[in-house]
Length: 125
Image 1 (cartoon, helix red, strand yellow):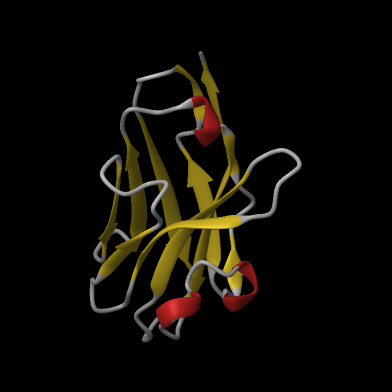
Image 2: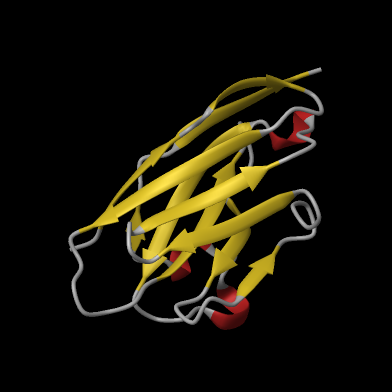
């Protein structure tokens, strides 16, 4: 069982930056594919960025050029650096993980097996 714990959420003004972290534990041999997804109030959960088990990254159009996903294999920590935040980035951000690569369905919430409880990001204008 993979256990994920997010941290780093908070309040920021438009144009500001935040860095989210996700600490993973409970898995041993398998290398995980991991992703960040978010859910704004009244909207469906959507994929933001993914990093495969081989280190390949993919971003949603909404995050491309502003967000950076990275993974520290030694510390088993997933990070999302968010710059130039906009009011539309206001959401609960979730860390997700799986032993399988997700390919084109990485942005689909049902594709992921393991989830953290989420961390709130609030962006004020």
